[in-house]
Image (cartoon, rainbow, N blue to C red; front, side):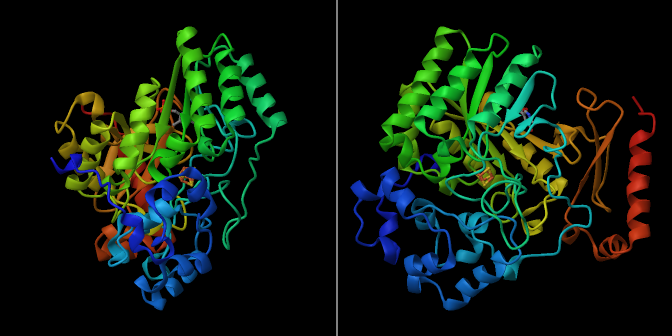
Length: 438
Ligand SMILES: *Cc1c(COP(=O)(O)O)cnc(C)c1O
Ligand code: SF4
């Protein structure tokens, strides 16, 4: 039952840069925002001699090949175990190390999900029949190394020049007009970037505009905020009041308004998260969690079980666990399909069914999310899985590839030869097309 042990100690005081900061100051969104670390100089000034110089050099090297800019809140920085930064799950997600980077899988693509190709207007992806993804902005309170939307989110990096999705009212109006023109749309995901970075007035305006459309029945605000800066829910009353007003409007109109958030490891959940969730529960806001399966972070059954139990304990419904998308620059974080399917078996049955996440592959090429277990074909030797998506792209096949480092040496050699690669993929597609035995 250690999922109930949520830390409430002054953990940040071990960090030299925060040693003199008391809880009243540390646990405000103002302090967190003002002291967010966005470069290695600030990181060094804050963490100081807790780690050897070589670690900072390693981060400098890591950033040279990173698709995401550096941005981490004091809260997260303080939750890292700096005595063992290499194995720490929070460090792994936010600070790239050159010493851990591995070559990309040959089939990786930026915007592997075709979010831009499936865009009806810039920043609005309409792929599924009744729901669409609205990206009102391109910034977040922190930047995750593994972001699926690294083609757009955060500042440019040494290897990625970003598509801009700025918070402009003209672009939003185009999105609202499109949504109004498509009666089949009922459900809008408001994501980003991160809706935490929208102003209170913007939260309210977007909510009112969407709920005011007769076809819209459900909206969700997506934010990683609860996991990286729960203080905002406790001290930014304007923002929380705006969200509450939209939720109340939804109830009056008999429409559904929820928050979707993103926790990946039980260490990201503290007493402060619980306080923030208590506030949202009092305000009647339902919260669901979407987790990303990552090597060295949560790719073992015990960690995932603890995460799921801890989320449930503070009233967050675990909704999805995503297999890591096929995006460049973070190949060290991907796992094989087999690893995730095994974890799923351990998680299912561990707690309430409605608190049991689906383990999904968001397919490359815009086939949408598929249950990991639903593959048409999976060859564990070559690491190739084939999915279909009859309700999104009938007749098409979609591929997922296990990381090469999880294959045996002979198979890894085959992947290095282009002709062998194509043969392996063609064979997998042929097997998937075989009439089924059913
Ligand atoms: C994930 C996603 C949605 C929402 O899908 P759910 O399975 O309902 O959570 C909608 N549109 C796009 C483009 C998405 O990627
Ligand atoms: S908070 Fe979400 S959108 Fe922002 S960097 Fe992280 S994964 Fe990407």
